[in-house]
Structure formats: structure tokens, C-alpha cells
Length: 213
Length: 79
Image 1: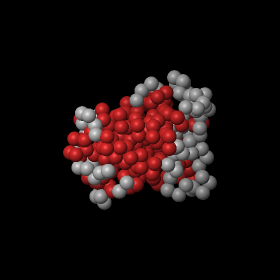
Image 2 (image 1 turned 90 degrees about the vertical axis):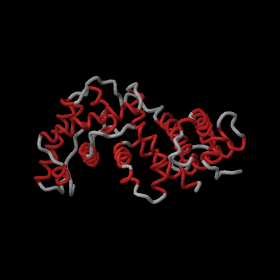
Image 3 (image 1 turned 30 degrees about the vertical axis):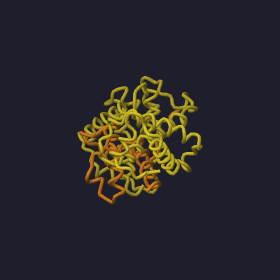
Image 4 (image 1 turned 180 degrees about the vertical axis):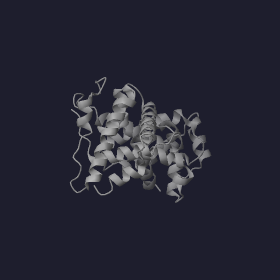
């Protein structure tokens, strides 16, 4: 077994008709890494890990041309294995989530629903000025989310930032992919940031308002 | 059923908004560089300064951050 191959040696061994020893070395490497990274925290079985590695091996072999040599080959391969594993883990994790509880079927989140989503009682330990500032910030943000974002931006932001739904799940329910969703959320954040600054809200003011709550 | 937003969530949301840059990279771009970024980190280099756009994306994107942390962990297991 020779896990210490150079990048060139890996590519040579795996291109075309892959060498059995190289395949086994890579499989073992990925399995060890995933087991360590996921094992305890994510409650995966050994069988799950083998499935992830198997899927990853297919993707790695199909995409050898895209390896740019910016890192060790095994690092690049491990990255792909991690991505495969998480895609599958997330899909399973949210499979049973009730669509009713966290529905994105609303075309327009109405004022009262948004109000209750963004509602909390300021901590009694705050001074009156901080309480007012926090409440007015809350009201302003609500207004901006309601008025300034597109419908898609609003739905995405509420799902991710307020309901805490993972990006991939939100993407799935909105019939898009995670990359497009990230860009949608980014656009929403840019717009909200611009509007907040136009209203004279500064980051210092926000930090001040939340400093001892 | 909407989940009420706690005060910490609200603060994080506002911080998140204020930390927004006009030219953030997306998940796909971050993914292409993540192996290099991870190796830099493990080599003790200041990856956040050397590749600031990756650092920024990982702050904004919980999905990529989760994968990055798992990758670091996996790399440590076999080193």
C-alpha cells in the first residue's frame, strides 16, 4: 500500500484503466477521514460511510480532469467525499420534516406573521434607551423585509435566517440549487444593508443597542 | 407556524447584513478553493488573510462552513 503517492502518481494510477491498488488506497483514505469527521456527531453507520465513499469515488474518477493541483490529490478527493456525505445526510435529515410546520407555500408572508416571527421581549436588564433602540430596529427591519425585498428573497431569508432551515433544504423546496440560493440571499442582504444605511443605521449603533442584553 | 426570532438570532441577522460585501463569491467558487484553504489552515498559515473571500463566504454560508470544518477534521484524522 502506498498512500504517499505524489499528485502525478495518483493521476497516473487512476486515469484510464484505474489500478486496483490505487483505488483501494484511495477508498481506505476517504473512509478513514469521513469516519473520523462524521462518526460521532452525525450518527452515521459504517454502511452509510461506505455508500458515501463509493459515490465519491465515482465522482472523483469522473472529474480527474478538474483537479488543478492546488492541493494534495488526497485533500481534493476528501473534499469531494465530504460534499457527497453532507448532501446525503441533509437530504435524509429533513426528509421527515413536516411541510406544514415550515411551509414555504405562502406567496406572501403577511404583516402579522412576520411580526410574530420577529417578535421578542427586550431583556429587562437593558436601559430604556437600549430597549427603544432594539424595538425600533426590529420594526425597521420588519418593514424593510416586507417592503424592500422581492417575494423570493423574502421567502428565502425568512426560511434561512429566521426559521433556521439549512440552505440545501430551502433550495430543494424552492426548486433551486444551493448556489443560486446563496446568490439570492446575498442580493437580499445587499439590499437590506443599503436600506439600513440610507435610514442612518450604523453598525456601531446596532452593537451598542445589543451590547449588554 | 412561524418560529419566533430570539434576540440572539436577530442580532446575528443584523450583523450578517452589515458584514455583507458587494462582491462575495458563491458556493461553487468557494468549493473549488476549499481544499487549498484547508491545507493552508492546517499548515498554520493565515488562510483568512491569504484568501479573504473564502473566509468571508464561510462566515456567511453555514452549509459551506459545516463542510469545511468536516474537511479539516477528516484531514487531521489521516495525517
